[in-house]
Amino acid sequence: MGLSILQPYTLDIAVCSAILAIICLVIAFVALSRSARLKRKFNRLKEITSTADLERVFEETKDAVRRLELKLREAEEHLREVEEALQSKVSTPAILRYNAFAEVGSDLSYSVALVDGKGDGVVITSIYGREDSVTYGKPVQGGDSSYMLTNEERTVIEEALRGAPQSGTTAQIS
Image (cartoon, rainbow, N blue to C red; front, side):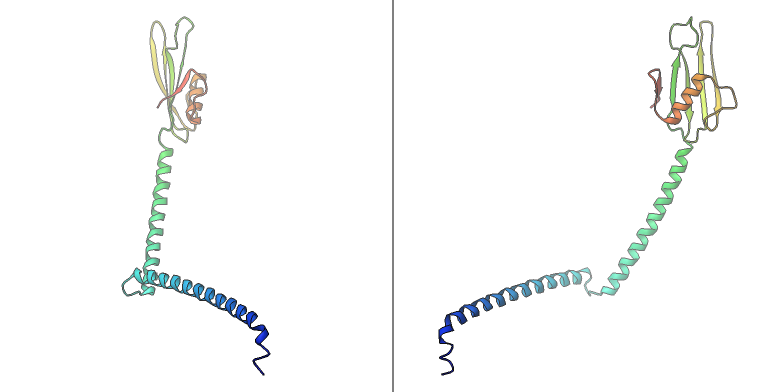
């Protein structure tokens, strides 16, 4: 009498049992997959050292990071020194050719500025004339000189400090 009540529902019970079995099977596969993944991760950790002493591995890693940080600080200091040294080197020399005298037919006179990033250096000028030529240099500090500068000398100093020629008669020396 007890089981006869369930007899009309046997198909429904069988379908529900099959669905429940499939769900259990999926859960089992997910659990196996996660277990295998964890096992692979554990094996990778064990491969780090033969004894799998994770505390020692952690300490070695910390020591390696400290050494790298020290090397990085040394490299930054060296870079800072190089940048400071570059400021006192001639960065971009510039030359300006021009016609100093109307009766001389070509741009045979010139001014060359050799200055560093602070504007310190020298400007060299050569004036070409039919009878004679004169070459002289003037010290430059902070983009100016204690000697009177001509317009051409000022122009070439400004262009050297800017690092780019402005007109067709001025050129940078490579």
